[in-house]
Amino acid sequence: MKTQIALPFLLLLGLATPSCIAQATAQAPQQDPLVLPAGEHKLPVLVDQCAAYLKVNILASPQELAGGPQVPAFTLQHPVSLDAAGCEDFLGSMLWQQGFALTWLDQAARTMEVIGMNGPRAREVSTRAVLTSVEAVLARPNSRLPVSVVVPLAHVNATVANNSLRPFFASAGRAGAGELMIGTMGNGATLLLTGSQNQVAQALRLVQACDVPATQPDPNDAAQVLPRMQQLEQRIAALEQQLRAATAPKSK
Image (cartoon, rainbow, N blue to C red; front, side):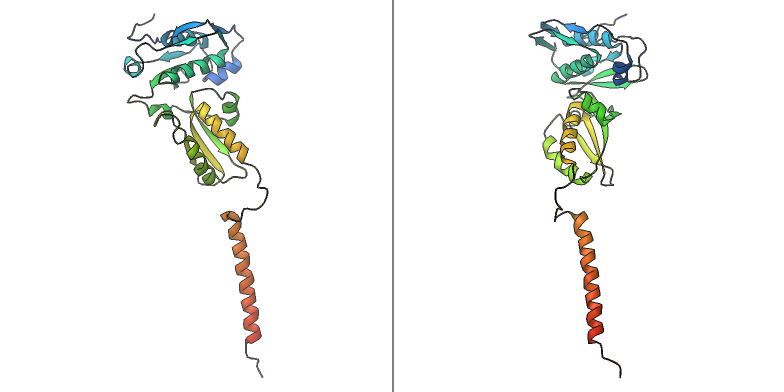
């Protein structure tokens, strides 16, 4: 039974699926694509269609919806055909365009929730980020769902990568909701990324392009300067010892 609300995002009860959409799209049997015809589409109706197609629950409260357009809608100039992964990505993008984020509320219960990115719960978006792999993020670089990724680094220092990435994403997204958060684990070899999957994918591409062996030693790299300083100190100490031995008074 459907419950009418101010903007009718509906709670749709679905069939059993795996604990996350990524697994569902990989394991679910093949089904006909969801085809959206050209023309105007109301966003609440799209939520209903995608929830039914993906067999998940999608929740949105009137309080969350009040922060967006009164009647959120969009227009397609041409029909769009979507498989399961494409359906989730397309819904996430359309919601994002109207100021909403699609998040997981309870993966075990196959329940998602729409959160307004300009409302009082905006910071919950980042706390709903699902820990996933680098490969899974890059496989779907257009997804808008919040994710977290642990990125191992082979050649670039994590602190340097952190400081280098921040200017690229400083003004991207909405503070507390759509912004990309970058951090390290303190070991110099692990970078942490949290944000919408498309921004995380963009950051990953930059990291992968730069995480390569240096063509020649960097004279300003502290990791290389310290060993050279230690070697020089050892040579100076040896020379001083030789000098003292040469100038010391000889016993008769």
